[in-house]
Image (cartoon, rainbow, N blue to C red; front, side, top):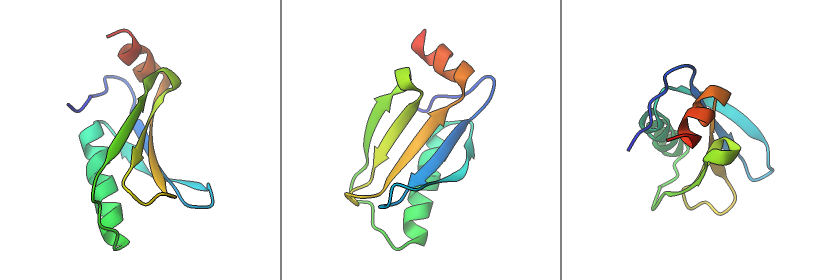
Length: 88
């Protein structure tokens, strides 16, 4: 289920095979960020066969593996959102 933010937003980053991260956008819901991941992959002619998500909420992010073995997506929570999620 998509988590919605009260104060702030989540930032979605793409990490390439060289370990370099770049911001893809800011989103109010996880669902919006996942749509952006799918669109990014489509724009780069990469077929997403599966999406594995590792929840690191305690550390302030979720990690998305779409099967490339060397490139990943990270969804970082704002500090206040991380506190809210940890107290659910």
